[in-house]
Image 1 (cartoon, rainbow, N blue to C red):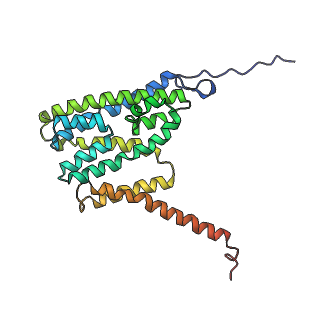
Image 2 (image 1 turned 90 degrees about the horizontal axis):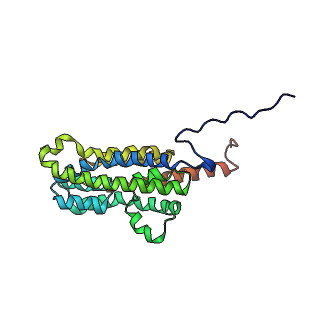
Image 3 (image 1 turned 60 degrees about the vertical axis):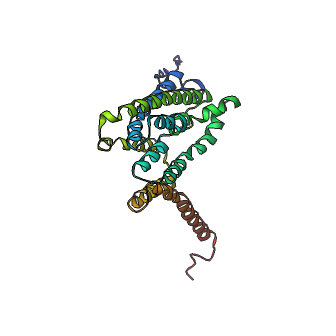
Length: 258
């Protein structure tokens, strides 16, 4: 009999999963740094936009240090720059920030951090850290991804916010640069890959249509609040659709040609 030899095993690449689905720490750090640096640099756009909307240097930096959720920050200063009511602007920013609470519910189970660290980690529960943490195959990888992304992004975002606010005067008319679109563009780029089901895509599309359609007729900041109605509307319609399908399936008299 011919001697049997085992087929050669493929050599794992630098980003391949290791034993038991583990991902090399270096690969996790690389991905986390990529997201943290790319998004962190857009803090410059926020600093410029905030200064252009009339906020002081201290107010601008305080928003990045304490709020630290890009979409909410851009929504607030954008509404203020458009002459919106401060309370409406704050309400729109708060609504956008609420999504982080839902991220926290999932991340708390995945990371399982010690109780003493949770209040500090909560400051870093944002779109970017969630996007890096959730796909990780192990708890160790998830913790590394969350920590590196959060630390990198928090540091760069606040540093570039300061630079942007200080350099706003040198840029002249900040509206002409269109830097206020940088934050929403980054947010959409992170959100789009997460919309996997038809319901999610329809909800997002309807929210965009509501916000853009009402932008010319409602005060600044209000269209964001109204766009929240997209979620219950789509859930209601999809629920009615499932009920109708169930009725058609279960009713034995349907389809008998009577």
